[in-house]
Image 1 (tube, rainbow, N blue to C red):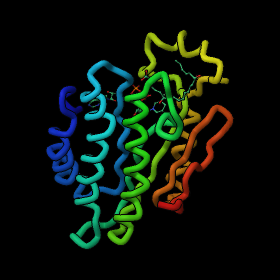
Image 2 (cartoon, rainbow, N blue to C red):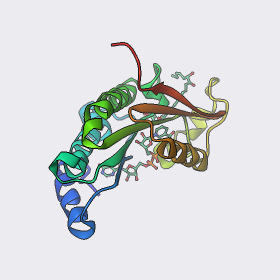
Image 3 (cartoon, helix red, strand yellow):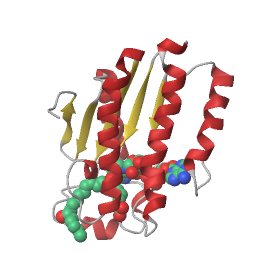
Image 4 (cartoon, rainbow, N blue to C red):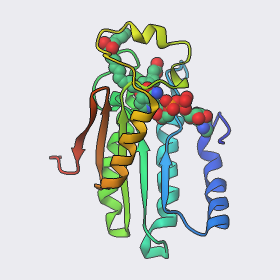
Length: 185
Ligand SMILES: NC(=O)C1=CN([C@@H]2O[C@H](COP(=O)(O)OP(=O)(O)OC[C@H]3O[C@@H](n4cnc5c(N)ncnc54)[C@H](O)[C@@H]3O)[C@@H](O)[C@H]2O)C=CC1
Ligand SMILES: CC/C=C\C[C@H](O)C(=O)/C=C/C=C/C=C\C=C\[C@@H](O)C/C=C\CCC(=O)O
């Protein structure tokens, strides 16, 4: 676990422990995240900076030109990283950041044997919404709040197909790629 005030400070120690025990990294999933809070810098630190920090640390252990074996990094964003989310603008900004970073970093590190994928779930029934679900269920555009197992299946699809730089949206009616690498700058 990271100290809640600064998730990135703890990362290098955590990475070193894994290397010490297992010798290498095959997969990193940057999943930790928090919902809206008045302290927007804290939110950005956890939802965006820690994802960047984790990705950079994993990459430094995975990169083939520095003795690594290559690997896969999966960043968990959100559909609020794909479309405007007026109910959570700062949260949405953090997730847009994760989408943009993942799409950009994947192609950048492909020559080093590392791939970066991004998963963007819509609303799923987890603790991040504790105390807010009743409110959320009233929103007209939400057809159904997903179960975690639906997000897990989409995660398996993303990792199975392993298209570097891709972004998979997960919706109540199924998973659909939003970006598969090629787009104009
Ligand atoms: N539940 C939803 O509707 C959706 C969630 N997401 C994202 O999925 C990811 C997982 O969230 P959920 O499972 O839904 O919520 P959750 O609240 O159940 O899980 C979040 C996890 O992040 C960890 N975490 C938070 N701050 C941390 C810190 N400073 N250091 C270490 N760990 C920390 C928590 O301990 C917890 O295990 C998050 O990135 C969230 O933004 C994305 C789209 C939809
Ligand atoms: C004021 C409400 C404005 C718009 C509501 C809109 O009509 C609507 O219903 C849209 C819903 C879309 C939801 C899509 C995805 C949600 C994804 C999660 O990542 C959100 C998780 C936690 C953030 C919640 C927060 O308060 O920060």
